Amino acid sequence: PTREQITYFGAGPALLPSTVLETAAEALVNYNNTGLGLAEHSHRSELATNILNETKTDLAKYLDVPDDYEILFMQGGGSGEFSATVYNLVNVWVARRKQKILKELNIPEGKEIPEDVLLKELQKAVDEELKVDYLVTGSWSLKASQEAARLIGPEHVNIVADARKVNDGKFGKIPEESTWKLSKNPAMVYYCDNETVDGVEISGFPEVLKPTGGEDDPIVVADMSSNILSRRIPVKNFSLIFFGAQKNLGSTGITVVIIKKSLLPPAVATLAPTLLRKLGLPIGPIVFSYETIAKNNSLYNTLSIFDVYIAGQVLKKLLQTFPDKVDGQQKLADQKAKLIYAALDKYPESYKIVPDKNARSRMNICFRVTHLASGIDESERTFLKGATDQGLTGLKGHRSVGGIRASNYNSISLEGAEKLAKYIEEYAQGPK
Ligand code: PLP
Image (cartoon, rainbow, N blue to C red; front, side, top):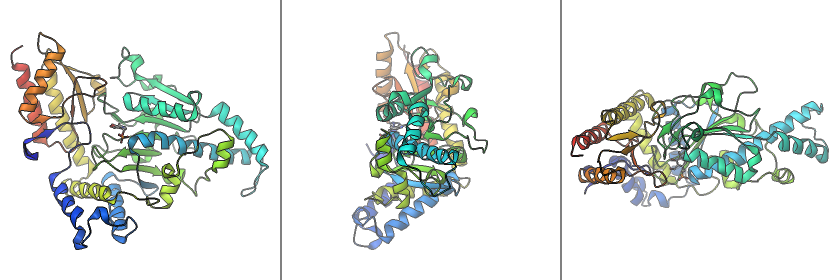
């Protein structure tokens, strides 16, 4: 079939707009009449820097990222960030603690104290107080918390709440905020805004994490890999947001980090590796150091400028399509999700939506098909077969949970969502 005949609901990588791919295909062969393809140009060339800076500017414009945030292009995917967030924010926590210790000991700024004195104090703080907090609402936040435990030890990882405990061992609910057990002054509070596998989305910024402007405001980190660019986010409430490009932004290969400048030097004097080593804390690879990537405008090492270019083209298209920027995309995303959920809700005997109503993701719509008397497996097989026959593809759920998953990313048009909603209704009206 042709691209036009297919509506692809796969969970990622997602489809890119055909016009972007066509422009990118030309750029891949001969960029701007330079005789070289874009993937062949040096990442240190002026044209590469221009593409990078323009993409940063457009992303900041589209999402209204305030000036006191830095945008980084990294590699290693969302999974790389599971590790990078720990390496970097644990370092920031210890660095701040060092400042506090110096202050308590009345050491003037710029003056050092004997290393053994400092180490003793820091070691005590690390052993007794260092925590990273994870809200576990699905497979990806679970994985992130497991990576943290692998890197710094489970004794330093605090699970704020585990959604499976309030839902018969399965993901599908967001635990009530009043039950969250937050640590005192953790190195970060981490959550996944949209759980791609489990179809669970946090609908707004958690009340309990809202900053008040004081020194004790929590350092909030969010994985937005699968819902970025689909709704307005209060960036200023976060210390760090990260997302792989391959769902709503562009092609696989770059990962974006939006980080508050107050977590980077010169605001924080991060700790040297020798000191971290003495404290028994992990030292991250230099390519995962936010400080290093920021200092080098994301060009510490070879970056795929071609992938940055694709992201840039997607953003230009979004800015043209939606004069009210991400608010415009949000309205459309909400409308499409509503259509699909409404079709499913209309036939409760034929479909069971996996998550709770107030945890439903607008991006990954997960449900079971219970239509046929012969059982779920047969129902889902026939549902998928009928869908594929109509060009509705990529609907099979994640291998770890089964079922059906319709990924309603930005690349799905309103017509595409309508086509799926219509098929859902038709199938339910068919023979049992
Ligand atoms: N976080 C979320 C929410 C995801 O959906 C995924 C991948 O699908 C990841 C993290 C992992 O991303 P990557 O495959 O880029 O490491």
